[in-house]
Length: 206
Image 1 (cartoon, one colour):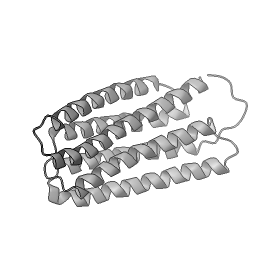
Image 2 (cartoon, rainbow, N blue to C red):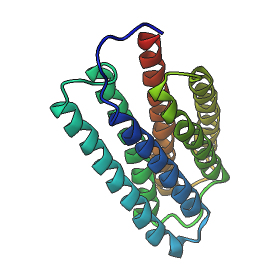
Image 3 (tube, rainbow, N blue to C red):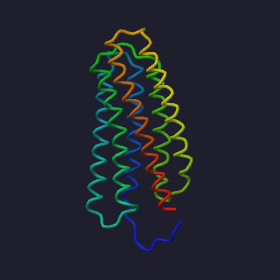
Image 4 (tube, rainbow, N blue to C red):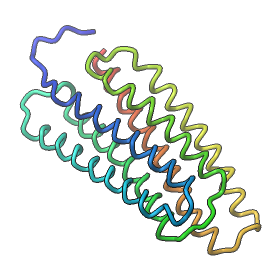
């Protein structure tokens, strides 16, 4: 670790941790939503939306602090990328929850629950890793694990697409489900962007 001769603004660290913990809340709610009966999903989608709004609030607070802080813990561009990537994850999950309700999907394929289960695991390791930004210690296992989880999410996504286009489903069902599974895949990709940003920060700071 190189010697730093300038002070650092530490208020960003708890904000990143809170944002990641909020993603875990959102992923857990999404898991409940996909397992619920169709009649119970609107209320759960509303709770996912509340988590998304909390994510927006945290992102705004990070950006506001970035714009008013002379000293930052690491590069301003990296702070912006990390905050934006965390926000993108929540946006994708909330959009998937919203479409599930708007499209009045009665029965979701098992693969959708598998996608969300991977998102939950990824959210857990992301929330656990964020406090490590303060010391940039023991983070390599985090981004390696997220990469592995994203590969798992890709495999589930491809199996879902193969099933959707197998001819077993009517066209309207295919269109509805394709939008949902693509948003869940997007959430997994965005989690990987978070991990890639953390890796970039850690390498610069080492």
